Image 1 (cartoon, each protein chain N blue to C red):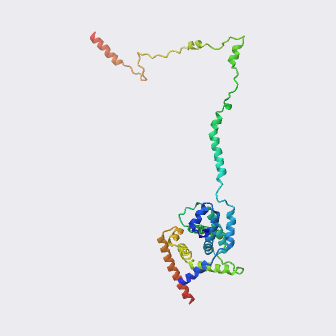
Image 2: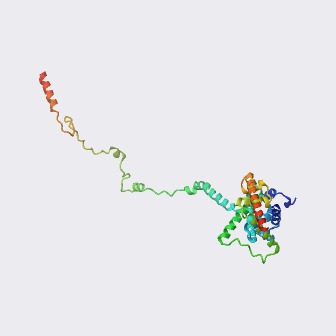
Image 3: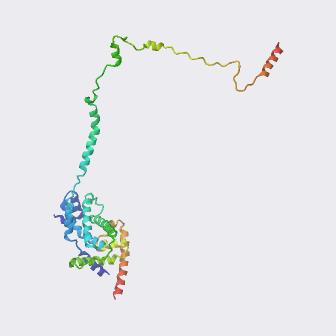
Length: 182
Length: 138
């Protein structure tokens, strides 16, 4: 059985027992998800790559003490959220605005990714932070209600209520956009 | 609305981490050992301190440290060996025992007949009465 075929928990257990190849498998499995979340949160691919690196470096330290109270990705999501906040804080202190990066010298793939991130950002921008988080985890990352609740540190009922409110807000926003387009 | 979200979801799924990210992570992590060994110097220091604390009393009781300084003859012993002087020039114990203390001066005695009082009250009427009584009996 190859490492890639193992479950998340099995991979973390292998890593904890000293198998460094298991960590490579963890990186392969989660790097895209971490990068996407960072990309939407920071709207900068370079920063998103830095955040992804930092998350896994912290993961290398933290997963050795992992107690399996939550799913490994849930834990990584929390780390990602914290690192993104730190990067945003440092960006603000450097007085950089949330301007779109220059896409003229970028390859087509990167431009498309940035455009996706921009559209998602635009969609959830009007939502309060908790609702935004629920939309990202439940709709885009397709986590279960239980996993979303664990990642956000709240109850499952709270997740359902937040998602219901967020859906209402998004529907209203899209209707308005449709009317304005017409 | 669902179509729009599905479309966004699909484009979201297309976002992938660049391949250099994994390489950078691997390079960053390669220098770090999986097992921590930073406790080894601390443990060695702690063991050394404990050893010193435990062994200090044992080493302190060893005979090398208990050797006393060579005794010298006392001055009185040297003096007793001198021919021109009496063997025992010190004071006798009996003399010390019988040494008389100088007598203390006697305490000043109060006159018992005269009652001591700050108030100089004379009890003359009483005396008079006594005298009268004496007179009656006589």
